[in-house]
Length: 73
Image 1 (cartoon, rainbow, N blue to C red):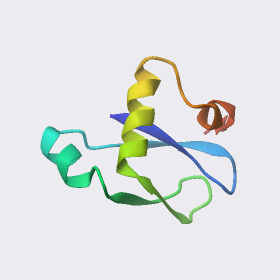
Image 2 (image 1 turned 30 degrees about the vertical axis):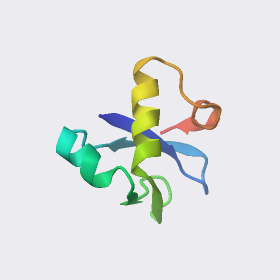
Image 3 (image 1 turned 90 degrees about the vertical axis):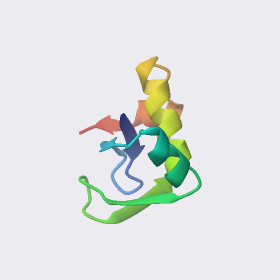
Image 4 (image 1 turned 180 degrees about the vertical axis):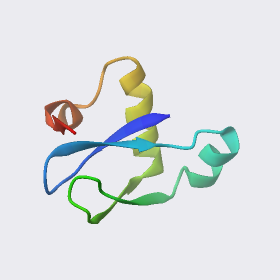
């Protein structure tokens, strides 16, 4: 699933490909994802469940305000 994260340093939306197989959801639901930011090159992290929710909401065009207001990369 495509999901988005807003870089706190550049305010740019970063697209993340999130694993969503049922086994992955169960494995990662309470974990933090760590990834290299394509906008600033730093490591960022976010909760898997938050990234999953943003991905699901983006399918319905109801992204959270902080994601909506960020610049697209």
